[in-house]
Length: 387
Image (tube, rainbow, N blue to C red; front, side, top):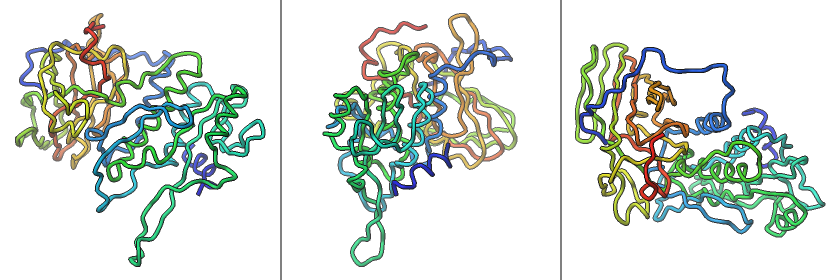
């Protein structure tokens, strides 16, 4: 229920063998004393998204302006099967993470506060000093299906005394209040339990709103929402003491009998991207036809996500770390994950060689389909200028 909102806030406050070897030093460049950028803190928030039932590779997140004049990234799946479907979008998590993002951008928001200017509505977040607000409309309710006593989650309207209508939003904007308003329904039709993609779609719109209404560093979401993608086959697995490799078509099982590190080196000239109509429609990118890229392609200074397909299915503990040598010859650690999704900062340059270091505990570890990198719509248009 909406009345529990405040309590929830408080309680939760494609390669063949690469001949390119990176000259990585034993100690990677780190500066613990340097202040962390806004981008780094935003990516920390996105790392809180659950990835267990990830379906982003076949889920279009399409930008549009809604009836409230807000830009959102709505899910547009067609033919979604309801048989066995379980709720994906989590409004409580979305609101919690939106709060953390607003605070990173310098807000001092009140939570679940009455709208100003005598508008009969309640806003999820409102910073009175800045006259900025965020509202996610709708709540989830369980309904019984026929006589089976089986409950099914549905989106319902909020209480009329709390709900923000388009007319209310227009009134507030006319009086100088800047708002981002989205509706739960826009992120509801995701793959079963895919909270990652559905909540990311909501947060991408929030981040763009925060960029537009706040001073300081902007954080681009153009690659994070993955209009296009770069794909790499897994490179040859090096011989490592204590590691056996069980190969299958498209991937391998890494069987570690002891703790070990596997270094995978990626050549940006060997990437592929989806080709033809499927790239525009963004239908299951794991099986879409691919074409070799015309050159090493750059993300041009946008934060992104890398998906290590299959790696999240490991039956033993592991960690993957992204490393790259910068233009000064210094090897830098750009991100790591103990799951299948690794968020990389804008310092990551897809047009230069990079490495993934897989630190494996004893057990079985799966690599399936390859490495997928989210990319912006203009990936193929802009000339690459490695930084």
